[in-house]
Length: 433
Image (cartoon, rainbow, N blue to C red):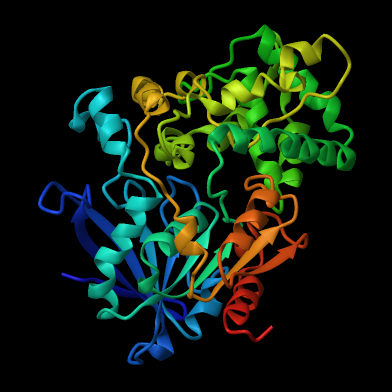
């Protein structure tokens, strides 16, 4: 039975679908997808066009909005919105340390997870679209990784789209993961430098925490091993609109005095745990590099290998001098699966995915070159998560795509100022700007 309920200004309806695990084997195993339909209270009886939202990640379910938060209020002025939990996330057949053993051992789990990339997500959308829209094309809004999915959609099933809007998610069409991270580390270093310029007192605070972690074994309340590399990975926040400020507040009260000497406070440890644990989104860690896999070349722990080309990120070496500790950003490493109890049972599965050499193409440059779907993309200047140069190169490769390049927002611009961002991009798809 379909359940509908109300929140301020909106009517929500739970929607569930079944789709093939492998769309090339439609008679084989099926998995369940969950999506939440949202419509304005004053438009429930209207025949509205549809907008499907593809969340960033990978590995995150769609936003659980309350009422008309962020961009949703703007969208509801003219659309019914479908907030889709992409396969393996949220309520859509979640993939984690508890469920994946049902598949068998690490090899079987990796074979299963190979079906959880952008190409399969697009085919899920096309499988459910006739049931949702009656066969009419819909508008897609892709944030970050959702933008990667949108470019794959334009490559493989453009007939399903009336328009496409992308925010911070234009991927390189042909870059290997090594190319992605080789471009990423200098961007991260710039973000760290900007943070220390804003909060110079954090240089000493970060060094002191790192020195403590090198000298002491710190285990967070859930069993997470807080190593210095894990601490550095808190720099992922620096790509968000308020991330530098939140990192500053975290660092300023890290230590308390105890009978045994200075120690990292319970409050600090609890907050760090919430920031670092993958318990709520393990798929992010498992398929993050796989999202760049195309062809026979393995990803092979790309972020870890490429990091060795940037010795300035080595905390131990930094602490032998007086330079600032560099935080890192959006990257997954072998040690990620050792420190986090939500990931430890999946280490061998991650190794299998890193070694995989049979990745299908995700994008079709020839088809994108003759694209006829109206497309607009927000490209955030010096985006920490998605390389601006790669994004603009892809923008030029998609016929008719219109870009809005801005330094007014960080990567989460559609969340931080969603109505304005979405309004501008929809206008671009209609040649109104």
